[in-house]
Length: 283
Image (cartoon, rainbow, N blue to C red; front, side, top):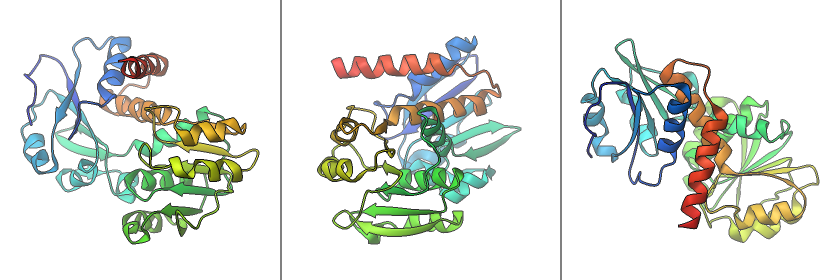
C-alpha cells in the first residue's frame, strides 16, 4: 500500500486490491481535464482490507474523496462520520467524500445502474430476474426498487450464500424469490446479470430463448464485450445494456460529489473510457 507523493492541488483516488485494471482513473482524469481542474489528480492505490483504516487516517487536507472496490465498500463503513441512507441500506459505500472535517460515505453504484438503464431507454420493469447474489446484485436490487419494483427473483448458485443480498432487500422493502441456476425462468421484463465474466455463458441460450420480445438484458460485464450472454440476447432482437454505462454514470456521480459541481462532462468521460477499453482489447 503506497500513497503517491503529495501535490499542490486537490486529490482523489480509487482503492482496491488488485486495482491496476481499474478504469476509474481514466474516467475521473477526463472529467478533471474537461472541467478545467488542472490542479486535481486522481490515482489508483493498491489497498487491501487490512490496510484501509491506516491509509484513510494518513490522508491530508488536500484529499477530496475516494472510490472503493469490494470488499472495501463494506469495510469502510465503521471508519466514516456519516453514511447516506442508500449506502446503509445496500451495506456498502463505494464513495467517500471529505468535507467539513469529516468522512462521508455514499453509494453511486445504484445511481449508475438506474442511469444506464434510463439512457438505453429501458422502461421501469414490472418484473425482473437478477443473476448473482453478491454486492453488485444488492445494488441491482436497490436500483430496481428505485424504479418502483418491489419484488424480484434472485438466481444464485448457492442460496445459502445470498444472505447479505436478502438482508439488503429486506431493508429496502423488496420481496425476493430465490432460485438456483438450474431452476429459474428468465421470462421477465428485465434480466440483470451481475455474474463475473464467463459465469453466465452457460445460461446464454436459455435466457435468450425465454426473454420476451420487449424485454431487456443488463449485463454488468464491460470487458470483454459483448459477452456470450449479451450476444445471444441481442441476436434475438432484444435490448442489451452493458456494464460500461453503469461504470460511467457511477463515476459521474462521484465527480459531482467530490468536486461539488454539477457540470460534469459525461460525454468526455464516455469517450475516454471507451477509448481505453478499445486500447486494452487491442493490446
